[in-house]
Length: 199
Image 1 (cartoon, rainbow, N blue to C red):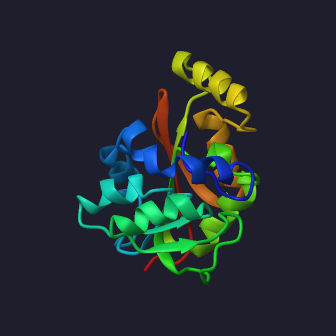
Image 2: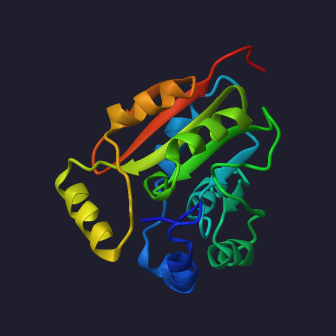
């Protein structure tokens, strides 16, 4: 699970924000860096979309990046801000950034919670400059642990939507991204590069 964006489960994440980082493992910095490595431009400006308390931002900060955490949950953003991350309160489906504003967008353990994931992916692609990347880490619903997670999220009352890595690549391609699978398994990573004239 990760922080929820759009409107659906935001109240839940507001309530658990103070405990969230104690319950969740750190983001996989190595997997995220592997996704960012597909960029054909220097990656300096990064958005951690649906970033919650900044789990992905903390992982990337160890490599020298300082992502902006974008989330709709006030409680989660308060935790990210307290950790020193720059934050913006916004819906993942309507990012308040101009076209080509950043070099990369990362979405970690959160796309399945978004009320309109297709729109969120299109928005991510819009704000990433040519040669930049959109990196998504998600849960494989057909793995043993993934099937368990799907059941747990249904029991909690989430209306989560999960994809296999191949299905997520198809979603990326529909948004105009050059998609590829970086890693597979329970927590997999898919990257989509924005094509065009590279910087």
